[in-house]
Length: 511
View (spheres, rainbow, N blue to C red):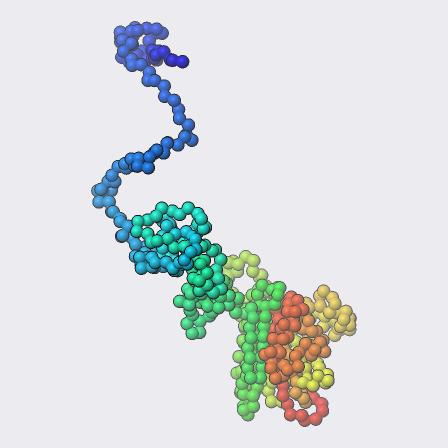
């Protein structure tokens, strides 16, 4: 159906812009010939936006001619021109692309069908980017259509494609399978780690065993966060050993210990073991335990060589530890504002220690950490050498409950004595013993004795060779607590006590 040409209806006269009357051929105001207005252009059909332009029918169809690029930019500066040879780049193996001509020859298995080497489209991995006999990552499987053949490509080399790696790196060469074009991530990981291997004395990652640990505690090779140094600590001297572990439930280790040895004025040895347990409900318990253990140990190492009686030296060491913990509470005003979740009460911890000097065994404590005596002859009686500063111990001492009832109460482990600025009154306990037979001194926190509370249970948990191998014995005791549940931090120090038999009986003085 054809459409007749109609005169356009004008709203204004082109000459005077007055509105003409309907059907007028001349403007009534200025006499402008309205018939001189050009006719409306013919209608053009709208094309759907999904219709694509037809592709050239012949392969030799003329290509689109793009306009030439401007020789200068908007600042009248000549536009830079880059050629492919200006940016050589590197392949996936890190070699310059110029080297690919040297590795263009590929090893092939005769008679094995596969995708031709060198047939990859422009922009894919170059032939020189993989080991001899390998294909680029993401290559097509056998039988797929190869890409366009570049000029000067080598003869097709037959091989198959595989996506796993082999235990034997040479197997791919003889199996007819391609290896991965990119290096095995695990191999590359260790190769990179070897290039940045830590120098002597540097920390090595516990995960990959090859990367260097940065100051923030992360491996520069595999990125794993390293366990904190206090999560598990071990130390062994000739006559004492100690082990401390975070346990299985706590997010950090709030225990600490210090072991050392010195000499008395007469030249005889003196061995020291201090074990501290941070009070978890207090602020910074891990700092409190570390400060107390270090202060007590340093005090003993200073006073014992001067000839101070070991029991008096232990008393002074506990006072020094208390001062060190009290100092932690003296923070500048506003120091807590940066940690809104930090408890506001003073840092606090418990302390227990033992000193072997001459023929004496000196113990001292504040809190509920303990010292046990385990004779080398297990047929002889064992003993607990300390009394807890706890609610349960007070109930038993007052005769209000028996031991079984008191320790079954949920308030049993509430401590009544500790080191800290908010302690009611510091009452260091010390005791001197003179064993008449060899044995083992066990110094531990409640993280261990909760799983071996009585002296007999503790003796049963101590391995038979702990007297000769104290470090191994301490490791076994920590393992005993972890096997029992590891609900708390676990710390234990073992001091083998060797004496010449001098008859029956032993002296004991308690202060």
